[in-house]
Amino acid sequence: MNREEVFQQLNGVFQDVFDDETITINENTTADDIEMWDSFEHINLIVATEKSFGVKFNMKEVVGLHNVGEMVDLILSKLA
Image 1 (cartoon, helix red, strand yellow):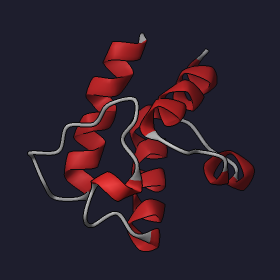
Image 2 (tube, helix red, strand yellow):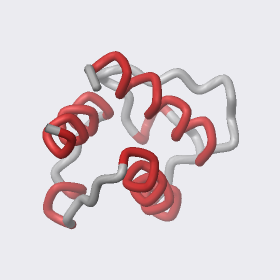
Image 3 (spheres, rainbow, N blue to C red):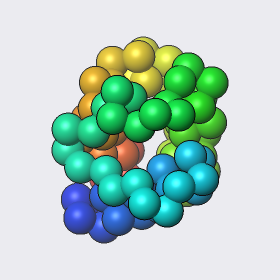
Image 4 (cartoon, rainbow, N blue to C red):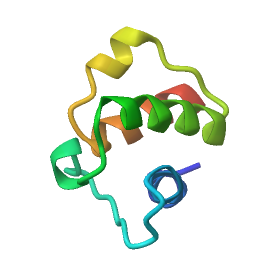
């Protein structure tokens, strides 16, 4: 799976979790960019992402994420 494919699949996860088909993520997307992205939805997003990609994140990895680009990098590292 390449970076573009991860972004495409992850964008679908975001749309599902936030129930908003207009969401389009990019490298720099953060919680500040999505109105409903609070701490509760962050947990839902992480769980949905793990399920969608068949990976598991540890707490240190999740806390260290600053934007969607870093999340994509983490997913790619788990898939390698």
